[in-house]
Every structure is written in C-alpha cells, then in structure tokens.
Image 1 (tube, rainbow, N blue to C red):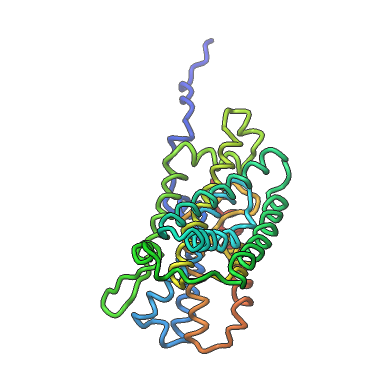
Image 2: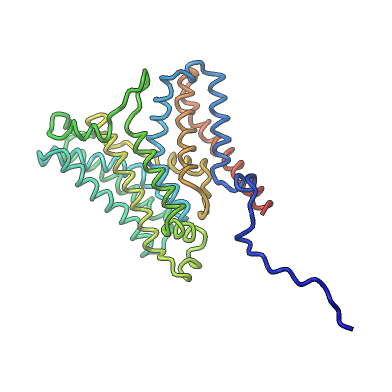
Amino acid sequence: MTATGQPAAPPTDERLLRTSPLRKLLGRPELGSVVGAVAVFLFFALVADSFLQASSLGTVLYAASTIGIMAAPVALLMIGGEFDLSAGVMVTSSALISSMFSYQMTANVWVGVFVSLLVTLGFGAFNGFMLTRTKLPSFIITLGTFLMLTGLNLGFTKLISGTVSTKSIGNMEGFDSARKVFASYLTIGDVEFKVTILWWAALVAIATWILIRTRFGNWIFAVGGEADAARAVGVPVIRTRIGLYLGVAFAAWVSGQHLLFSYDVVQSGEGVGNELIYIIAAVIGGCLITGGYGSAIGSAVGAIIFGMTSKGIVYAEWNPDWFKFFLGAMLLLATLLNHWVRKRAEATT
C-alpha cells in the first residue's frame, strides 16, 4: 500500500512575515524615551504655570538643541560600540581656535572658522586612529584626549591672551555674517527660535538617514554588535570607527562656533563635564552602552527631556541644585524602561 497525504508546505521566508504594528512599536529603541518625554512634559505642565507659555517653547528647544547637536553623533558612536569623553572640551577647543587664530592673525573671522574645522576634525581623526592602532578601549583613548585638550585650552589661552578667556573679535570682518550662521535667531510671533535648532534638526535627519538608508549605517550596527564578526564579512571596521569620530568632531565644531559667536569671547575652562550629558541624552534615547542598538531620533528625544528638565526646574522656581538629581533619576528610569521594552520586543519575536 502506498501512503498518500498532503504535500509539505513550502518553507516560509521569515523576512516575508508580516509584523504587527505593536511589535514594530516595541522594537523601536526610542519608545522608552518618548514615554519619558511625555511624562516629563505633563509633570512640569502641572507644577510650573509658565512652562506652557508660548515663549517657553523657544527656550526649551534652545536648551535641547545645544545638547542635541552633540548627542546625535554621540549616539551613532555609541551604536558603533565606542565612547568619546573628549567631546565636551572639544567644543571649547573649536571655539578657542577660531577666536585666537582670527585675533592673532588679524584675518577675516571666516578664516579662523575654517581653520578650526580642520583642526577639530584632526582631533576626531586622532581619536579614531589611536583607537584602531592601539586596540585600547575608547574610554582610555578619549580620556587621554580629554585631559590633553583641557590642558591645551587653558595653557594656550593664557599664553596667547594672558588670561583664561579670549580677546573680543566682535569688531572683526566677517563676524556678523558668521553670527548669522551659527548664533542668529528667528522670531515667530512672540517666540524666538535660535538657529541651533535648525542645525540640530539637520544633524538628526542626516544621522537618521545614514542609519536607515545607507550601507555605512549597516556597518555602524554591525561594528557595534560584534566587530570581529563584522570584519569577517567584509565590513571596514577601521574606516567606520574613524568616520564616527569625525562625525563627533564636526558636531563639536558646530557647537563651538555657536559658543563663540553667541558671546564673542570664550572661557578656556568651559565644556568640562558636558560629554557625560551627551552620553546621557543618547542613553535616555535608547542607545545601549554595549553598542549595536539605538537611534538618532532617540537622542533627540533625550535632548528634549534634558531641555524640559533644565528649564522646567527654573519655571517651577525650584533650587537648580536639584537638576543633577533629576537628570540622574531620569537616566536610571529611562535605562530600566528601555531594557524592559527591549525584553518585551524580543519576547514577541
């Protein structure tokens, strides 16, 4: 007798399986930060009456943009599995180079701006090169760069200017046009929006496009997930890491020029500690410390949370000394929430 039965069903390609909207939502790295941002907004809307005023919007977005400009490339770097502890002082270095070169060479301010761009990119290339050549952890490499830049900022400023701050360049040729690019503002109704908000939006959009639409974005996730495995399948690990550090350096240059052209002079000791805030914004936005997971949009949400908290405390008329406490609490809660969301997403796959 011959047994007969239904023919076996062809194997189904899991890439063609439909994913439910809930599963897609749970899989987004920025989900936890969005929930946190809504909670922070509602909290300060209840405790601070002026928080909901139209004029407060521009202030909150400006505070968020000063962090978000740096948080976006820092997020990409963390997705790639690396850190940059020199990012905060690199912003100050960029501003100091522009100011002192322009003043000492009596050149057009724009000459100093472009010299600063080249030197700042050199700092980023140095971090990436040292990381890939020495095989030391990025924590050690960039900590060394942080200390060197901190000393150079103070030493060169005092050597050239005689004080801890730069000389005024407000009356030099090109200053007004450079201020329009890096430190101007647009008034809509009664609300002033600083140009840094546009820089921030552009950098987040570019970073998101890189992660989602380009081969380099795939390389970033691969290097952050497992560098050796990525190298085995042809991913240029060295080039990817150096490119990520160049991205952080470029954002530091943008932030540094904003610092200079907003206040005309720069204090050499500024920027110390800001690198931790950039990392916090990226982590709150869903980036994993271990790399391989995160998004640029999440870093933007993390920066918005920072902006709402820093200004919400002022609007609520609380002691600003409590700000760091709230920032630390949000970091812990956001990390726990992101971990829970990721576990739920993995459980539904």
